Every structure is written in structure tokens, then in C-alpha cells.
Length: 339
Image (cartoon, rainbow, N blue to C red; front, side):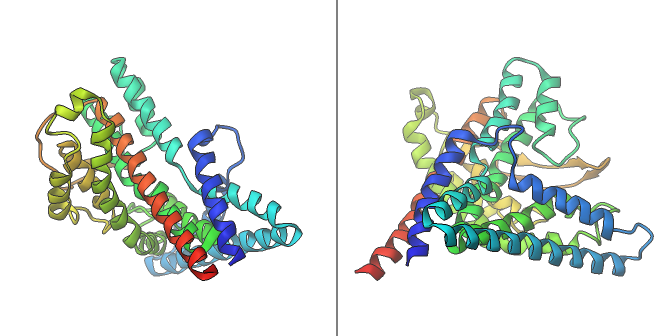
């Protein structure tokens, strides 16, 4: 019971730290450490001369080693500080919670794209969007840049906030770190390129599995969040029937949520496209290759820089609803047992 009470404090403090601080450049960060570990193990395990089967086995070994090291170090570290004093334990685990979340950082980085587009600096916008998307950006025009930024905000609402909150609530800092380890491995080696197709297969499939429930939960919360977005919008946006429409968000979500090679990526993209009256996705370039993708949403109006700001509003309202849900579950369990 004391563990769950501590987790409530961590959820409050961690969310506040993310909301206030974001991810200041130059600060030590657990995700960057996980990324460096993954990069180092990749250099050790990936042999270009290996056949596909051997690459798959080496990729599986990398996943096992990463999870064992990251989860084990987190468990031992948190157990040690809680053994010293519960207040120290809460303080340290709150920092872990904070570093597993990326709500403010996602907004900060995507708004750099928005501001560059509004200043008509397409080259700067292209550079900014290249920092937050995995596709090739050299061919993107102004509309393509804005669309890519909206898509990454929508998709990362799940990966960067909703899924971490879910796993942190269920299993504290250890499960949160394990989730982000899987997510980081997927973002580094889970590509369908010649280099990673076999080696990164295990990481990619594991990421699909751990995001299956969170991505769908995120989509439904985003649909509900459109109502809150409408309420806090300015008068002009409240009058615009194309913006923050929960009924259309639900319809487009149900129609287009499977229009992606990944079982999860289209979930929040479809909800966002419906909420904002946009057509997202479509063909894109990755590692110099054109990848054909179906469109998501209806082309009711052209995408614009302001849509990045609107997508961030959806991100914040969806995150708020998820945080309240997590707090409600933990509080219900704690007070229900105490009663």
C-alpha cells in the first residue's frame, strides 16, 4: 500500500516537472543513456556479413540484454534509495517518472516548426521538422512540413505520454523504464531498411505489442479531448465547424485507424485528422526510398502552420485526461483498500 501511495506522489511530481521543465538541452537524461547503450550494443552485435537468420538472433539478443540491464539497474537503484528513506525514494522515482514523459518537449520541438513556417522560413522549418520525424525531409514543401509535424505530434501523444503514463501507473519507474527501452530500441533499429530489416525485427514487434493497448486508449482519449479543446479555443475556432469536431474524430478514427503498416501508428493520427478536418499520411520518403501509404482523414481544408498548435492542444488535453484517469485508478485502489 505504501508503494502505491508513493506512486501517486511520483505521478504528481513527475508530471509537474515535465510540464514545467520539459527536456532542457545538456541535462543528463535516462532516455539518452538508454540510446547510447543501444548504439553501443548494436555496434557489438550487428554484423553486416551475417545472413538474415543470424541477424534476427543477434537482434533478439540485443533486446534481451537491453531489457535486463535497463530494468535491472532501475530496480536495484530504486530499491536502494527507498531502503535509505522513503522521501529519497519518492524524489528519485519522481525524476524517473519525469524523464519517461515528453509532453512539453514534443510541444517545444514541434512549435519550432510552426514558428518557422509562420515566419515563412521554409528551410528552417524543414530543419526543425527533421529533428522530430524519421522520414526524409529534403523533398517536403511548406504543406508537407506542417503535415509531418502534425502527424508526429499525434503519433507521439501515445508513445511519449499516454503509454508511459499507463506503464508508470501499473509498474512504477521500473516498468516505465522497460517501456521506454523498448520504444527507444524501436526508434533506433526498428526500421525496414536493408540494415535493420532482420536485426531490428524483434524490437519492432515488441514495440508493436507494448503499444497495442496504449495507442487505442490514446485515440479514445483524444476524441474525448476534442470537446475540451473546443471549450478552451478562441471565439473564431469555436465557431469553425471543421475544428475540434468529436463526431468526425470518432468517424474518421473508426474508418482509418488501420490504414498503416504499423498496427498502432494510425490510431491517434486518425483521431487527430478527424478532429482537425485534415488529410494526413500519404506517400513519404525513407532512406531515399518512396514508401506508399494510404491517406488518413478527409481533405476538408488545407493544412497550415496553425494546425501544429492545434495538434499540441489535443496533445495536452489528451494527456490531462490520461493523467486524471491514472490518478483516479491509483487513488481508488489506495483508498478502497484503506477503507
